[in-house]
Structure formats: structure tokens, C-alpha cells
Amino acid sequence: MSSKMMLMANSLTPLRPLTFAAAVYPSRLVAQPPDLIKWVKSEGGFVHKSIKIAQGDSFGLGLVASEDIPKGSDLIALPQHIPLKFDGSSSESENSHSALIKLAHHVPEELWAMKLGLKLLQERARKGSFWWPYISNLPETYTVPIFFPGEDIKNLQYAPLLYQVNKRCRFLLEFEKILKHELENLKPDDHPFSGQDVDSSALGWAMSAVSSRAFRLYGGKCPDGTRSNVPMMLPLIDMCNHSFDPNADIVQEEANSDRNMLVKVVAGREIKQNDPLLLNYGCLSSDLFLLDYGFVIPSNPYDCIELKYDAALLDAASMAAGVSSPNFSSPSPWQQQILSHLNLGGPNSDLKVTLGGGELVEGRLLAALRVVLSNDEEAVKQHDLETLKSLAVEAPLGISTEVSALRTVVALCVIALGHFPTKIMEDESLMKQNVSPTTELALQFRIQKKSLIVDVMRDLSKRVKLLLAK
Image 1 (cartoon, rainbow, N blue to C red):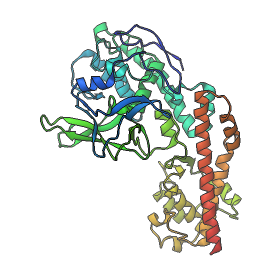
Image 2: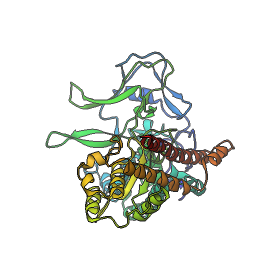
Image 3: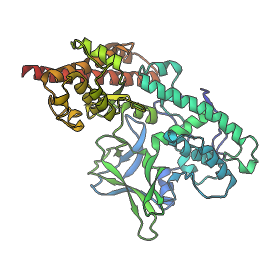
Image 4: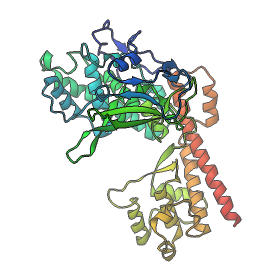
């Protein structure tokens, strides 16, 4: 992918090309951006007097308490005109907005961040944009894998993430062509980016800015009285960093005076002096944290690894686990029927299964292993699918079947580890060397994945020992 972004900085500042690469503590778009706290206040927002912007240890710039803040305190409140959002169904008649909507129609829903990213690029290019004080405070670079050097993309070593990274890079390259074709004959006044050139790297910057900072919140009211779900960028609020143990929460409420929606951050507990303000970005896998936010969380309890439900692979894993003649490749008709109910057999099956996270072994995979390794139709049909899918239900089809099922998963883990070209000890040794920030992120990510697999193996091995003791 091109490393040059041809979109210039907002015309209120000296024009200069921006070069994008991943960096640990990236600089902001301009050297001395406007004071974001003052801007929010000047636009009718509220910011607690004890909040300041400061450099953190782990995630760079963030919000910090300058003195103790009691639980329940309002920390930040934004009136509804401050969040940056893009409604693709807008009825605005402005031609440049119409061009933006047309471009957004080319973006698949799974890449929703690119749609809002188009609006972000439009406002960045617009002279005198209302949001310039916010946009100028955004990072100049992002540490997401689409900006990794090619070697460090390979260094991730995990096929599902490599697939997603390559998919996004291909989309950006193709979307650049579509964008140039759609805009080539537009009049200057109709150009959504004020006539400035936008390439795949500019698109990647905008998509990364949105994916790492935007929140999905309630938007305007629908005809039935419900509120639509709208991605929006929340100035200042998006400087709160992540924690699975947050000390603050985002809430929305209607202002009494005009029934407009306020977006607020409220202290979920007492916040001590010098503590950072922390929000929970979501119970996400390490893949999504790195792909969308550009960081890796050690020992992420919500991380998992993806496997494919492959009959030949399961036969091989079962034999390695000591099962003499597994029949995953040729299940009985009654077993095939249950596999279909699990969506692991028949047309339009979802063959992606996971290990790790809250379930440890995805319920569909566990049920399939129990059913196919049982061969006792009568015993299987005494249980409903939810029972067969639960690891908390100990040996519903007998200890022998359960041991075979768990040992098969352990064998799958061994096979999965074998697909990584390096071992954890080698990765940890590399981490001690003077590696680049992107190499360090790639190493952290693959160590996390391998450690997860090892943890699953240990847990299931302990369960097998307990079962055999009975």
C-alpha cells in the first residue's frame, strides 16, 4: 500500500503532505492544536474542572484526574451538535454531501468505520470546518496492522488476522480507484474533499481514526419511536483509554430544555488524583483490539482462536488422542442431523469454531465432538443441545466419551500451535531485542495467541485427569 497520504492538512494550517506509518506515540496532526477542553466548553459542553489531558504510560495521550473525583460525578457532557457523525440517508441537498453519500454506498457494512471516515476526511479538507479544533488533535499515525511493513504483517503469524488485514488493504486500494472515478468529473464546488486528492493511505488513516475512536450510540428517533444506532466520534470523550475494569461509563440522556440527546461520561466509582479516565471499549478478542485500535492486551480474557470444523482434521486429532476409529468424515444419519442443528453440516453451514474466551471450547464444537464420539444414539437423544454444548455439564454421555472429546480438543491445540513458525520462548527472546514498534506489536499478538492455546490445553488436561480419577 502507498505510504503517502496526498490529502493535505486543513487549509487553516500550512499545507504539507502527511506520511503514515505506525508509531507508538504518534504526534497530532498539527504541532500545536487548539485546546480541546476549551473548545468543548465554548460550544456548550461540560468538562469537570479536575480533568486534564496528559501523556499516559501505556496508550499515549489520555484524560487524567488532577484531583479526587467522587463516584457519580459528571465528567464530560457533549450536546448533540458536537459529536461528528454521518447519516448516509441524509436528505441534505448539498451536492458535495450527495457525492459523499454515493461514495458511502460502495462501502460494505462490516467496514462501517470507512463511511464515517469519509465524513471525517471531508471535514478535514473543509476550510473553516466546525470540527477542526477536534480533528487537529487527532493522531497523525495509527498503530493498526494495515500500516505495518509487509514483514511485520507476516510476523503476526495468525491466519484469521492476516486474512482480515489483507482484506482491508485490498478494499482500500480498490476504493481509491472507485473514489477517483466517481470524483474525476465533479465541479470544484461539488467535490466532497474540496478538490484535494485522496489516496488509499488517506482512506486508511480516516478508517483507522474512526475504528479506534468512534462509539455506536443512539441517534435520531425513528418513526416507530425507537432510536437508530449511529456511529459517532466524540471529541474529548474519545481520549479516555481502555480497561476491562473501567472507572467511567458513557450514558445518553435527553436535555430537559430541548429534548436533544446529551452524551455524557460519568464516574462509575471514585477516581483518585492522577488516575486515568478509563472506559471499556468492549469484550473483544485480541484480533479486534489490534485490527481496530492498534494495541494488544496481555492475558485478554475474551480472546479466542479460530478453527475450522474440518472432518479430516478432527479424525486426525481424535486418532492422535487415542480414539481408534473416529467417524467425523462419515457420521451416521442421526449424527449428521444433529450436526445440521449445530450448523456444522449441510448447506450454508458456519464451520468457524473457537477455543478460549468465556466458553473455553465453543459449545457447537463440544456438542459435535460428544455426539460423533459417542455412537450411542439413545444416550445422546436423552439430552437437549444446550446440555451437550455446555462444558459445565460434566460428561453427559459418559466419562469415556468426555475424555475422548477433551483429548481431541487438546490434540487440535497441538496442531494449532504447530502452525506457528516460532515458539513462545523464541518470541520472548525477540521481544528483549531492540525491535521496531510494529514488530513489538506483532510479537505481543502472537505470544498472546500461543499462550491462549497453551492455557486451553492445560485446563482441559486437568479436566481429563479429574475424570480419569473417577
